[in-house]
Length: 500
Ligand SMILES: Cc1ncc(C[n+]2csc(CCOP(=O)(O)OP(=O)(O)O)c2C)c(N)n1
View 1: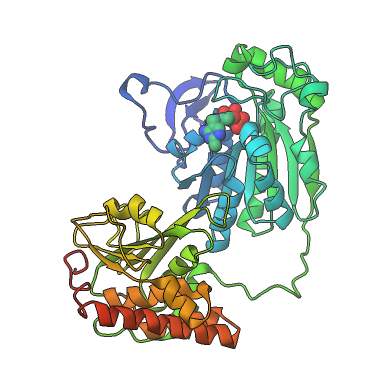
View 2: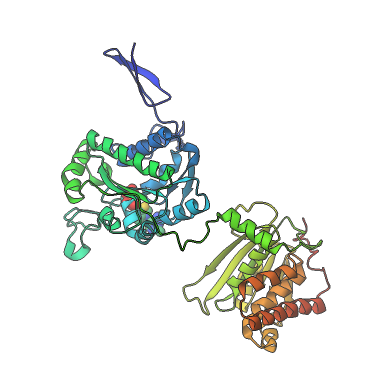
């Protein structure tokens, strides 16, 4: 008996006209979709939702092209967010609209991977407009699947940039009026005005014929990624029956009758472009860059250094005090000494004189999260930071306070506090700017966490002006000597919070 396989992992179901029809789902999907007990019988998607169909098309294409182990799928916010419950590939979930930016980083760091950004219209064409335009303009080697259902589905039907003229939504209850809300955005057309993209097509899930065309477009976009061809973009006009207030059949008809006339189905771009490469820097992966820095430095770690398994450091002060740079210096030093490092900045919109802080991990093992909730070392460059972060310091930790004395009413029991008049020392050296480098010197001497010669190597690589570099060298030394004279050597480094 002839046997027609519909999908893989087939389970025979019925026999018609000598053919055994077998239904199954792609192996690229997880065998079980995790859901709460009372929802186990259904997926996240409503009946007739286009996301389910697009998932199927993408999964089948990944499977047919043999890309499962090479694929990273980036799902942002919106109904797209659920994708990682379904696709058994590498999954990264990102903030609203940021998928093209995250996908850019992923592909640049892992150029052998096939990276997909899977986005809705609110996500891609509203909050994420900048990301998609610039990723397309740079010709990032990613595939973007843009599920355009002309509405914000997940949040209950607000107007999206692609909402049609006269279409009602909760935020355009009289229908979209161009005079007030502007015209719908045509993303495929907009992106096809750029030079770099290699493939842009708009397809629709209005009927089986168009779904087959969508299937081919999805496959083509992934083939181009497999071959490293460049930026590909498939816009998929997609039904959202629940929010449109239609049943699944009517919703498909609405795609055909209302959406397609407004968003014509077309291949807007299909050609390989040659980007000029004469001015391109030599390509290095992130791993190669880090390795290069380690080799370049080759600073031997002192015997006493790295007496910790991991060291969490928080540095806080005003913008303009060099707080973020101080953290970068430490992270770069750690990297040069062969440690795993992370640096996470946080600053207000003011940049200068607003509060700023950063969190640094130096670790012998891989770092799970860049957040440092209970630092062993707090560098507080001003009183506000001292008061704000002192209670977070781990028991046995140390606070390096960048003033000559503590505020009178300030007490702390779990950590040791060392006052360093950083700005006075910096002023005496001739520039208030190097107060942060004084604190680096103090920190290295007090904790013995990294080597001073490595600090100089990092500064030499960063500071090109010879006078400034000399000033930095003196500041580093001054911070070191201050601690040497005021605190018993090694007393801090041997405190409870530091040892392995
Ligand atoms: C930064 C941020 N802003 C707003 C939201 C609220 N929000 C969640 S989903 C969504 C709209 C998603 O619409 P769309 O991208 O069209 O996807 P759909 O759900 O229709 O597939 C919004 C505004 C959020 N989660 N995060």
